[in-house]
Amino acid sequence: MLTPLWLSLKVAFWATVFASVLGVALGLYLAKSRLWLRNLLDTICTLPMVLPPTVLGYYLLVLFGSQSSMGSWLKESFGINLIFSLTGATVAATVVSFPLVFKPARAAFESIDPELEQAARVLGVREIGILLRVSLPLAWRGIMAGVMLGFVRALGEFGATLMIAGSIPGKTQTLSIAIYEAVQAGRDGLANVLALVISVVCIGLLLLATWLTPGRRTVRGD
Image 1: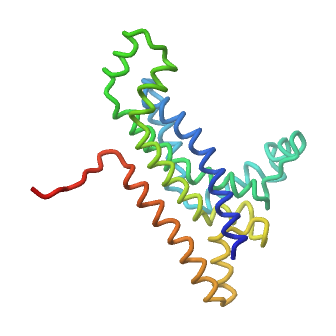
Image 2: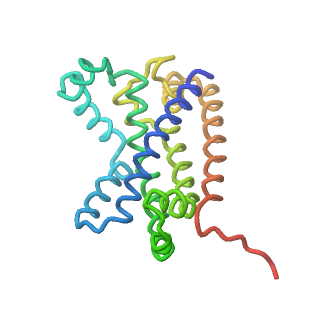
Image 3: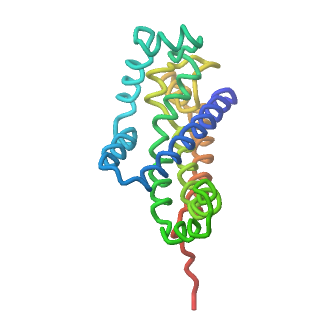
């Protein structure tokens, strides 16, 4: 039971790191950009949120499979094989969790009053200083809410992971896949325990994400 949990946490951690770096960067870029292509880019970045996980897994197989040019290049140049590996599971989890980080990050940056950033420019602050001292401090709650949501999504990822990484006990069998295998094998007791563990973790993280969400208000009595 501990091995699938450890693998799930490991995959979710690294997937969230990668999704956060890419999601925050693209969210910032599209929030500040005025290019006519930004709506198209936003749509492409959001696609993993609405496409079936098995379709995402199939696309990853086509892109990174052993017969593909990308898969062959990664294996020959860096010795990286994404198929039936924990690295492949991490890539799948990164793809499915990315929109949940990207969308809140973009919304958080767009909610910042442009006059605050302009005031910093007038005072002679460089763009990197504006980002670190103005934009990120004002947007951090939205970003962290997205990061928490992305981690929860990566932790429970099933379809795309099963397609590209398979179900190898002790190697690629994450918690959600272990639950599926337990049910298939008629081991309802194990399935119940595993489901309870992942449910408790996800509920805790969702509560934290709700608390971090911008615009949250606490209602008090008169």
